[in-house]
Image (tube, rainbow, N blue to C red; front, top):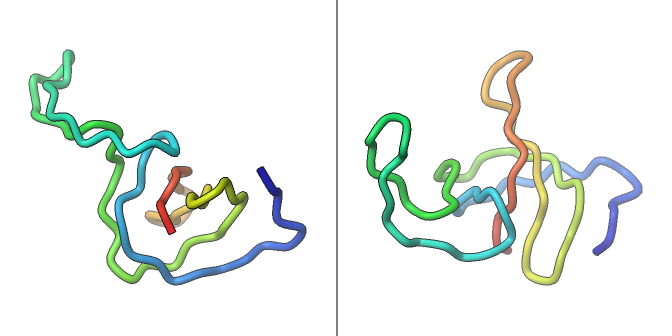
Length: 77
């Protein structure tokens, strides 16, 4: 894996995931009973992110959701 030396901002679309693995299995959340899909966090449509790291076909990114609240996750290039 490579760490980036400077902060790189990138506009990107795709599925933000908890780990750099495609997991699209449907499950139920044990706490809420809601249906969830694999390791999905969020669906991004042309959103600005900060790239922290690269791993093969994956980018580790920070997505700012609101002031003071951000999400870290993996997205496939």
